Length: 130
Image (cartoon, rainbow, N blue to C red; front, top):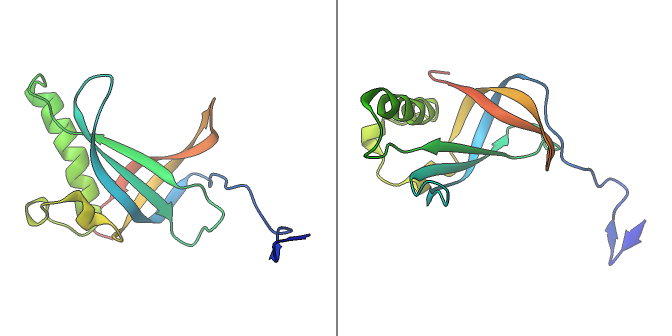
């Protein structure tokens, strides 16, 4: 079937991938503010390397807030540190999240059903040192 000179026969609906370890590429990274809490977070859009039919993954990492106790602050910073290390960055060597665009990393992905978006992948854990 052709429309405006384009073949639509091989158009696919992006889908999730099976749970497992995958290489990811950072498509976009921004610091945003939560409308619910007012807290800042890093929003990273990730694509799965070598899986052209896979849905992109939106991954959120909350930044510490003044209201966080030491345990919560450490948990949030540790999650960000693991992400940066898996991308090959030392946290002290990067000053802007936009520097992460194009970086690759490894992560263990899980599949989850979302009532609005259907089956989605989520990062369970970033794997550093790959």
